[in-house]
Amino acid sequence: MFRFLKEKFFGGARPAADAPERPLEAPVAPPPEAGTATSAPPAEATSIQAGAAPASAGADGTDAAAAAVSAGMPPGPEDATAPGAASAATRQGWLGRLREGLKKTGASLSAVFVGARIDEALYEELETALLLADAGAPATQALLEDLRRRVREARASEPAQVRALLAAVIADWLQPLQKALEVGAQPDGPTVWMVAGVNGAGKTTTIGKLTWHLAQHGATVLLAAADTFRAAAREQLGVWAERNGVDIVAQAGGDPAAVAFDAVSAGRARGKDVVIVDTAGRLPTQLHLMEELRKVKRVVAKAEPGAPHEVLLVLDGNTGQNALAQVKAFDAALGLTGLIVTKLDGTAKGGVLCAIAQWAREQRRTLPVYFIGVGERLEDLQPFDAREFAQALLA
Ligand SMILES: Nc1nc2c(ncn2[C@@H]2O[C@H](COP(=O)(O)OP(=O)(O)OP(=O)(O)O)[C@@H](O)[C@H]2O)c(=O)[nH]1
Ligand SMILES: [Mg+2]
Image (cartoon, rainbow, N blue to C red; front, top):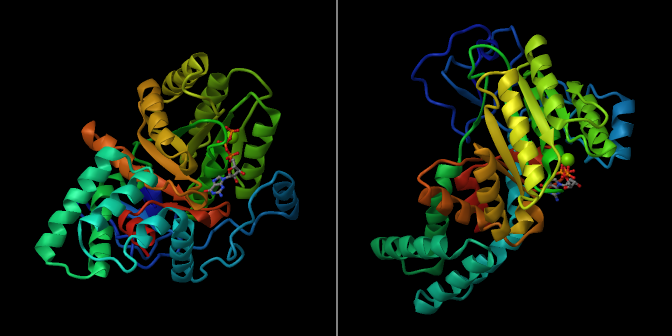
């Protein structure tokens, strides 16, 4: 989920240089407490996995919970009041929700294999299904070529085998998008993430969910309400701050860049691990607003040299191929370092991840999809895992 690189997350034990990252399938460790020894072996970068019970969730006061409801916030996790509760069960729950969430995208792909023979018609139907899922023409061609080769090599004779091979092809195709989000790579000062995207993509709720995940692992977070256009936007982030028990820097109206500057400075002064900057939604065609985003980024760098360490674009999975257009436009303006794809639960266009992987390949660069969202609940946002995704798609 995250790669925690600071000593505090290892109870003072300096990580070994060559220890591998814990695999995603590994049992989930309890959240480490700052300043205390953990049972996790020293590792250069330990990836704390999804599903661990929150350290701070459940400390939400009744007021915060009520405020959350009134602000239209999603309900908390089922196990929010049970620190240390069965994380494997939570992980299992996530896989179920992922399968459920990707049903719309996966249905037309799976339908191709029902009562099918392995012939040209099968590949044609698969091509149509991938295009309908918004995988895009170049990725579709490449995936099918790879599939044909694997089917030949495996001498597959059953549609079920082809289906399993397609899952493997998609998993390999998406693998370069999988990466853990790093916290604490800097020698000092906070890790700063700037979050951008079009209106309603899910930026603010995603920040709230990320904050929850971070807080449950003992990381201290400060939120920057750099969406200064609407009071409601500020309040929405404020509710997330209260709910997660973290600081927020906000100001009525004013310059988003100034809020971001204050927040990053405060994050350093208060010794926070992570500062997350929320920004107002905008279309890439609104040039003055894109310029404003660039200014936020520049000013953040003035407050903290090297920051922002991540420029994250939040994409609404429903937008399909348009999401790719957003990636290109925001990347040209800001230099993106990663993506978060939300709302994959409501869409048949989840194949767009293949199109994004294809684009990144063409650009010869890495553009990770750090997290995906398949619902409104806190635990519906989880790290992107290529194999899980492909298997859920073709489940
Ligand atoms: N079904 C579903 N809904 C989601 C998901 N992620 C976010 N949402 C919902 O999308 C809506 C918009 O989310 P916000 O976080 O307010 O979006 P935003 O990008 O901050 O919006 P602006 O600040 O207005 O640009 C909210 O109702 C969220 O609960 C998801 O993965 N699945
Ligand atoms: Mg918002």
